[in-house]
Amino acid sequence: MRRLSRFLALMLAVVLAGCTKPDFSDAEKTTIASLALSSLPALKPDTTNRFADVPAAAALGSTLFFDQGMSGDGSISCSTCHKIDRQFQDDLPRAVGVGRT
Ligand code: HEC
Image 1: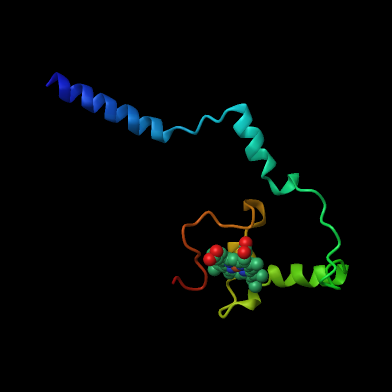
Image 2: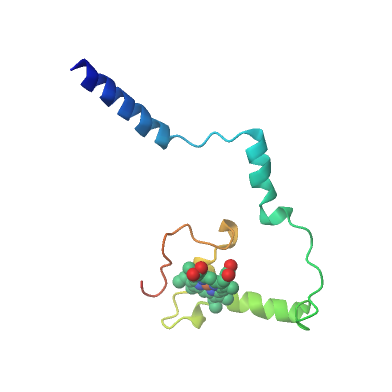
């Protein structure tokens, strides 16, 4: 019985440890911060795309990116899945669009 109690206490500790936020070291936090999009240097001019730095082209791309009219039923845009405040992803294991595959 005592062994069972110890085992259950250990299992509870393991489960609770898994529920807490990871405790990153300062070095790990520095590494993680270095991977943020905002820490990247400014883009160099793109010599393979003559429209890359044309503001009107960027505006068109932005309009299309947020345009739900691009989807079959008018409910989904690129930004539905590529969330700009989530590093252009949606936190889901599988994307959900008009339908699910
Ligand atoms: C239903 C959700 C969904 C919608 C809507 C969507 N995407 Fe995606 N997109 C994804 C997923 C999921 C991936 C990753 C696929 C993979 O890695 O296999 C992806 C990948 C990409 C990639 C490649 C990224 C890389 O790192 O290689 C680009 C570029 C992209 N999408 C652009 C777009 C554009 C532009 C639109 C709108 C016209 C759009 N997506 C609409 C879910 C979506």
